[in-house]
Every structure is written in C-alpha cells, then in structure tokens.
Length: 299
Image 1 (cartoon, rainbow, N blue to C red):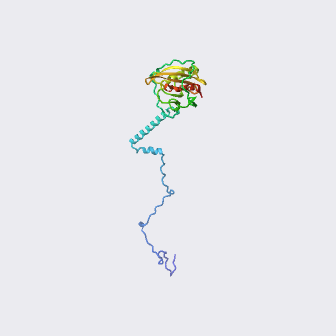
Image 2: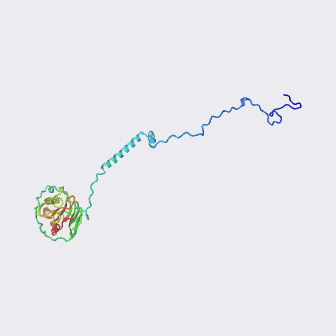
C-alpha cells in the first residue's frame, strides 16, 4: 500500500509526541498473577452449640469431681433421715386415749394404792331384799341435782357442808371435811371393774357388792369388815343399791363408817357407779345417804 507524498508516516497514539504518558515496558517477572476466587458456599454460619444436658445428666457428670468421702457422708445422712421418718410413721399412731376432763375445784392428794388385804377380801353376798334403815343425824339441804353426763347418773346435790371437789378417778365428787382417811365423799364414775354386761337384777346386785369391795381399797382404813345394812333395786330405772357399815381400827380407836354402793344401767357402754361414805366423825350427816337412795336414777 502506497503512502501519500508529503505526509508523515503513521504513528500509534502511544508513540505520538502529544501523548501525555509514555509506555513503560514491564518485564514478565514483575507481573502479578491473579488467583481465581473459589466458588462461594453462602454466608458464614458459626458451628451449632453442643446440646444442653439435663439437670440429672449434669449432676451425674459432676459426681466425678466430688471426693468419695463426701459421697459416703451424704449417703449416710440420707439413710439416717429416712430411718427416722420411717420409725416416726410406724409409731405415730400409738397415742394414749384421751382423758375426759374432771369436774374440779381443788386437786386433793391421790387415793392410796390398794392394799393386799383389800384385794383378798371376800364379801358375803348381799341380801336379795333388805330395806335401808333411817340413819341418825340431820339430812343436808338438797340444793339441786347433779347430772353426770359421762356416767348417765342423776342424783341430789347437797348443800353445806358438802361442796364439789376433784377426786380422781371419779368424774364428779362432793366432799365434806378434810380430804383424808377415812374419806367423806359422794362420787360417781363408770364402773371400774371388768365384768360382762349385766342382764338381770341379780347381776346388778352382784356388781354392787363388787363395787363395795372395790371402795375398801381407797376410801376406808385397812383391815375393815363389812356388814350389810340395805339391799334393794333402784327406785327409778334398772340397777341395784347396797348399804353397808365398815368397822375398822383407826388412830388406835375402833370406829365405823356408813356407806352405799350403787350400779346402774344408764345406757352407756359400761354401767354407772355411785359411791358414798361418811365416817363416824361425820355421823351427824349419815342421813344424807337416805337422800341419795331416794334421789338416785339414770338420766
């Protein structure tokens, strides 16, 4: 291809004198190699946290760090606590029977323990019928009636010199004078003698004799002898009353007490018992026993 005359030959732009930059030759050693970028796996995500272990698993895992002596100590304490709880559960039902409250104003000394003589005393059977004599003395004023809800008995409440007193094991008691042998008292309680349920008047009479014998153990001086003064069925209701005189030596003197014992069917689980005794020092009130015989009945 021919060039036009008078024109300069063609020069590339990088060789032209008007080019502001000159071409710089760079050796191949100075060239930088570009490493291709690996394919992306998506946005960065941290590795998942290990699953949480339960309380039991953590406890089991931590046992390995506990000294073996401490483990034995804790086991011994737990075993001891379980043993105490088990013993308490087994014996917690062994509770004593509740004691019903007694009518009380003053707490006297407890009655003396039964003597061997009284335990071995054998009384003759009471007569099938013997009217109560009118005893000497002056009857105390009847100021009301006593209703013993525990025994189911109702009987006269006497005025002076009688007053309510506590006298275990009786539920209700009226006393006069000193609280000492030989006793002056009128008292009621459930029959304290083991016996089959009475079904006839003869059974009640036998129980009344046994109640009189029982009274000798604590209400009269030791060595007394008994003479029957009365024996009859209850005026109102089902039961039997016996009257008796107790002769004994006390304080170096021969003395006697007038007494009565009654066993009554009051509809309770056990028959009711009424005891009354007045020593010779209170013979001015012996006639109070006649008041009791007339006024005693089941509620």
